[in-house]
Image (cartoon, rainbow, N blue to C red; front, side):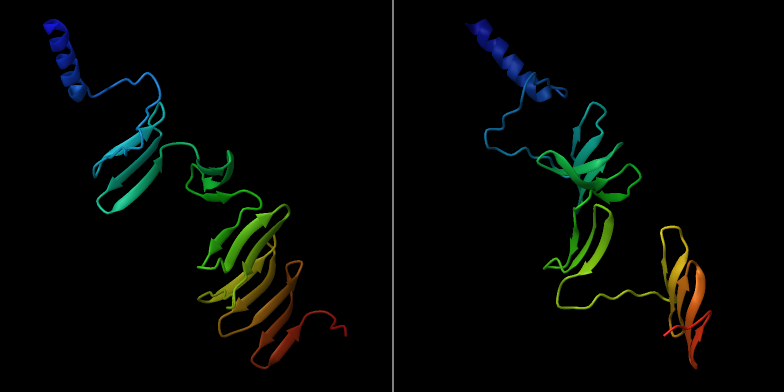
Length: 173
């Protein structure tokens, strides 16, 4: 009996000293918290590819390789790819503003930028705002304090100026 008690006491003492404990099954925290102090990391995966940690006043989710995906009911909705680019799948909206006033999304074959609140949608540029087609041909150009130019198939057809407008080609009423 004394030998069993000493053996148990030795094993319990070693639990605290063991830096690589093996669970061999699921960890049930019984409604308690798992606490990591400042600068402690939670590492997940065979290569510790996913890390969650808190340093000083900042919180971090760090994926070492692959995508960082956010899913609902097992289906990825948005994430960050291995290059650091953010992505949303079709039909998932990025909302901005307390009432989701600004929405950016792609649905099937179309892409949208919507201002749905009571305010206006402003697009600003320091010298020029240019709208291009998918093939990179210019469709319209707006110059700060200057002209507004409209294009057809990459050729300028309409230009405003301080004295009026210039039209290239026939002006049909």
